[in-house]
Image 1 (cartoon, rainbow, N blue to C red):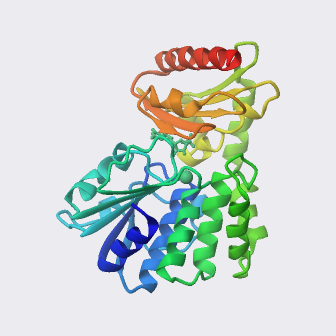
Image 2 (cartoon, rainbow, N blue to C red):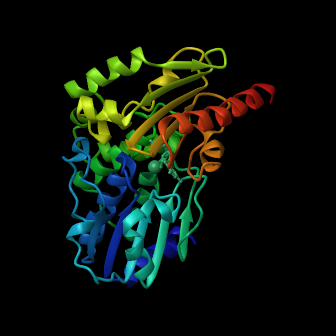
Length: 324
Ligand code: 5GP
Ligand code: MN
């Protein structure tokens, strides 16, 4: 499907639900809110439906949303648009909204996307889903106002690590320039998104640094946050996720891992690599996915077993990567 075709589908529908993936990040929140605000301008009935609360860090962004438990049972949307969501399992309990809709659309930039909808637009060249939404809004003729610009700026800046990662292109910067032209305060947005930490988070970082583990001559660095530690330190999911990029910043590390026991027997793994290991493949081998340099999966087992399996796979990927 082309973006023009997607624009035609949107124009012909009136009742649209936008579904970001579970455990939403800046790209999927920003993209979803931006699209919702645009649909509103086009007089469409639309809403973003999330499973969890919007992370505190993104609470300043504008957009109409509801939590799944606020949606009356039996409500059916004529169209659902999944954003930034690599496979339908990442819709979790909202899968029934997807399955009951007349038309289903999937807009994403993950290389591992399974093209699970009736209409799929997957562009792995885009640094963020936010870039695709920017193009879509141009085709739809929606003017980018400050609220839309702030959402898309957050989408793109978070997925590019503040325009630093290899997925950042000249196009990414051109698009960001259009957001700055609306007059948004990027210093304030960046302060909120990148330079604000809670005390609990800071204490967690201290603890995590003390307990970091190294394997394969320091090419793998791993932080494990047990359920017990998470409970004891009173940290939110969001605060735990923020640590995922830390291990790979250590000199000599190729793969950084964060293992977070969300509940007893449920371990969320974040993979980050620097130069040669394709972590989207490693995550996919555990039923997850993502990008070459950032990916994730969830394992239903205890921390010890999860650590063993993940390390086995990552060690192999590192050894093979070095040989390539
Ligand atoms: P994070 O480690 O920050 O949760 O995720 C890193 C990247 O991998 C993101 O692009 C995210 O969408 C993707 N990702 C994380 N967990 C999963 C998963 O369980 N399945 C898939 N398909 N992608 C994931
Ligand atoms: Mn994304």
